[in-house]
Image (cartoon, rainbow, N blue to C red; front, top):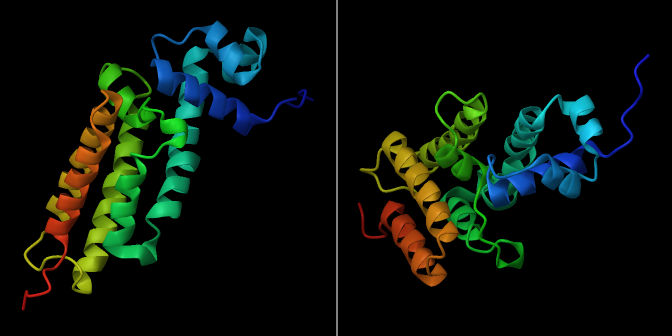
Length: 196
């Protein structure tokens, strides 16, 4: 019978995820992972097989838990376009005003197309694209979205905006300017009160 793990897996994955988000996959050392997870190198290798294994596990945790939690907090199904707008604005207000960006965005830029973790990047982007498409389709059906807007095309446009905002935050862009751009984008999507 195998020995049970003597650590909080969610805490370990959150620590590793934070290290990879801050420094990027290539720049994170096993020593960095020891510091952020509280595990020794031997435990990391025993539990996850390698740095790659811990990266993939922490990335899957990000998609499954962190991203899902952010969506539920800001863009729950019943919140319509206002919820999506809130999700975008929340990107500008990270705890402690940090600007290390999103694990999906950072990894999409850093990882070569052949890297095994690219599937997790694609999974994260797909979660966001599906969210945007589902919410836009729902609000289109009840008249909250501009009548001439195509939910499929607008969902892809929102995905590009979301990723672009995250890159600009990472590069230190002026937050009020980004917030104004987000508001303008959502104002453009909303059904004009005078539209018949």
